[in-house]
Length: 455
Image (cartoon, rainbow, N blue to C red):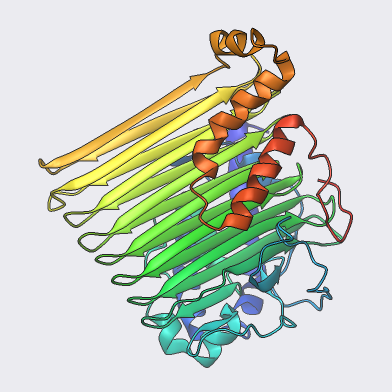
């Protein structure tokens, strides 16, 4: 069978599955979610599973990830979990409001968090049925199915995830912590759809942790839409720590209004294949966006970060800093695109990607891009790919420091520039510790995991 026929059959496999379970997808779902399904399905049919010919996916081959015969979870399953013992991002000292999701579904037995009046945190499926007018105003407004086949496939299959609403001028003092667990008796395909609304003047710190509890093969396709109102503030942290048989596809879309600040920080510590899509739209004057990311990969792991920043209004600022440490035969990619539109005068936009290769077999692809349609801006971008500076290593060894320790010191210093941007102190300290262990090669098992799972 030719490669072209195999690719066509692979896309047909998922379109065929959609047609088989279509009634099940519509059953029990709000008209808000159902109204998007057929268009999303048609958009997926037009695009198919992305190949390297798709410019946005040229550094990541997703075809093998979609080949296995997965179990699909289109209805809520009865699952038991102990919220007092469940894996907590490996940050035991972190004081948070804790919420659990399993295989893309909001856990029905989550303890009700003591949140400020008016804050809503719950199942997207349930809230779309009970409060459709609020969901409908935002759902599928910035995650465009015609622009990305993964978004189209997610929207077609979407049933549940989490919904978070922070009312005007409300500050949540304690961080929210959302645990995304994958656990099944079979190889599983998980779809998760999330929606976050931070109204004007509100403030929030949110930590998401992605983790696997067994050694089955997983493919997770998650889409999150985030709306940050005027003068609102959002810190959005993601900790990715899954095993080598897990594929994690994450698409996050953030729209900001005037005078708002939104910061994302993505730490990829473990995973077979990770693809992070991140799109910011600065839709109001004086908005500020900050994007930080780091990955530490080995063996044949692959991490691909794809970012887009659209400066649509004047007097806005964006900053991007992504760093990667690659060992063994691991591969990485970074593609960052900044688009300053014609009316976005007085824009400041900066982007940097630095990569450290520890072996000759490790490879990194990087492609920073600037599209500038305005004339009064300050923009810069740059990327480096290299190995440990031998002169600096010699300098340390000349002062009595052993080679292994000297290398570790240099790698930690390389990563620290990103780690220090974590504002939650307990999380920053724990990430520092996890990075140190990761660089030493000591993270063969998940630390303090209640289920004693293999990573």
